[in-house]
Each structure stands twice: as structure tokens, then as C-alpha cells.
Length: 368
Image 1 (cartoon, rainbow, N blue to C red):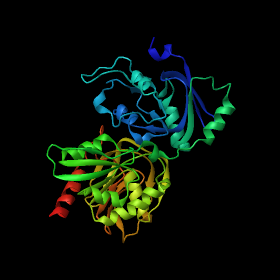
Image 2 (image 1 turned 60 degrees about the vertical axis):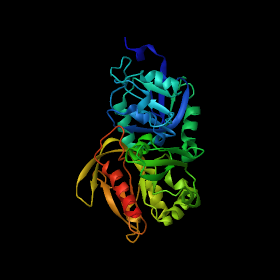
Image 3 (image 1 turned 180 degrees about the horizontal axis):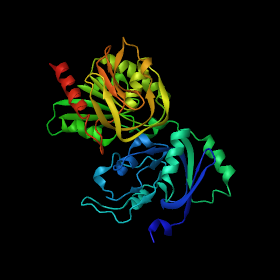
Image 4 (image 1 turned 90 degrees about the vertical axis):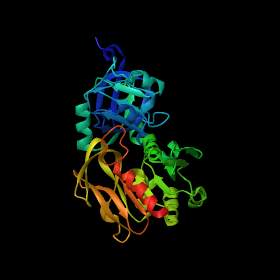
């Protein structure tokens, strides 16, 4: 008998009243969040520690999760930010030379409530057809408290996401072969963004999300990185106002994911919430400048509306091959470029890692 059949019952209930019965794994209790799905076959530990998932209950579409275990090296942040976790089946006996534990113990350690042994295919199809919706995972009897739970589910919304994940003070990370200094805005950044910069000879100064242009100028950087992060980008009015001033400093800017969206909003663009978002390691993106198509890692529920970008401000550089949404902007009015996908892709395809090299080249040209 498998371990998840020996565990106590757990329930997932969606805002439309659908109930999925399964088994508890990870921490026990009750949690409410926005139910989303990710199609990654690997990288579950990176997903669990990606701050962009703040406030969300994450469904893994791949049926077996945890087969290579977990380890300390692959965390993208110091803690887990997902609200809850949904899998078809978790592996109790992982096998890998880097394995330091199993995913169930990892969830317990980070106090993440999970549910397994449910039909994740049916759940994913529901989200694709009706769109992302709120839900609850609980080890209580959901049938006895259905109306109470539905009221809480429907009242839930993700608020103050960036404020909840950003660091409180500046932190500096040295590079063994320092050539540049980069200010990395922590909107909920993944550690591998920092590492990709360090690997290319950058001293990285990670700063809180609300850092001002005057404070950036005082750090005297060669480049500025706007990171990924969670929540509705339009909610961050103070940060957007700061970016309008920061971009006038003339320092090269590179934005990823939420950083891409915030930069667009600071330049008169608009964003929209996608029906079910792009989450996984196999999103095809077309580079409009070269005509090449790249496989990319993505995690976002919002997108920049391409037509909202004034051609005098910037031009669309990348689009999603599936739904033609904006995936990149090269700005002409300021020294900046941004992308919606993750070129650092840990774990995931490394097709677009060249964008970090282009950022380094931009800093070199400015420094000549």
C-alpha cells in the first residue's frame, strides 16, 4: 500500500463549488489561495521556493513528483512562498546522487499544506476551460462546512504580494572576478538570477522593492536588474513611480517577468490578467529580431498588452508562439530591455541565457 493511501483524507474545493477528495501530504490544516497549474516535468523544488508563487496553490500536471528528492542547493529563496501544493502522486523513495530528503518532509519543514491522490488532469482541464480561480485545501470535512468555506474562498484575493516577499535591507554579493556592479531589485527574485550575474563578473547589490532613484544613484552601479515577483503588477504604484525616475539615470536596465511588466507600466503600457497564465518549462517564444523560436521557462499570470506600448517608447522584441502575447520589449527612449520569460531558467531550458551576455555587453559599451 502506498504512503498517500495510509494518510488522512484531504479536500480541495474550488470557488465554483467543485470538490476533489484526496489524501493529505505535507503539513496539515486549511489554506486558501489562487489555484494555478505548472507543466514542468522537473524543477518542483524551484517552483516551491519561487516567490512569484506567493498566495497561490500550485498544481503539478506531471503525475509523479519528488522522484529525485530535494536538496539545499536548488532552493530559489530561503523559504517556500506557495500557499498550498497539489500533486497526483509523490515519491516516498527518491533516487538521485544529490538527494538529501523527500518532498513530503520538505513541505512539512516549510509548513506547506498539500493534497495528493486527486485527478490533476481533470483539475487542470477545469482551470484551462474556466480560468484561474480561488480554492481551499483542508483536512477538515469540507462537506460539513461547505458554505463557510465557499464564502472565504470567494472573498480571497492576493494583496501586497511584492511587499510580502521583498527583503527589508540591502544585501551585497561579491564576485570572484568583479568587473561590474549591478543593483538587483528584489520584487521576489530567484537566486539563480543573482548567480547568473555573479558568474559573469558582477558584484550584485540586492535592494528592497521600494528603493528610489536617489538611492540607486548613491550605489553607483553599472547596471540595474528588475526581477521577477508575484501579484498584480498594477498594484505597485510606488514602485512604478520610482522606475519612471530610475530609468532617467541612463544606467542600463534589464527586466525579467514582473520587472518586465512594471517597466511597461512605468512607460504608459497596460497589463492584463491571463485566463490561466504561463507556467512551465516549455513555453515557445519567437524573437522578432532574429526570427528564431526559443523554448523558455515561464511563471506568470499577467502579461503586457503589446498594443499599449507607444512605438516612440519601445518596440516588441519577443512574442509567445502560442497566444501571441508580448514576451519582450526593447526600449528606444531609455537604455533598457525586458523579457517576460526566465532566461536564468533553473531548472529549465537555457536557450535564452544569451540575454545576460547582452546585458553585460551593454554595460561594457556604456563604460567605454
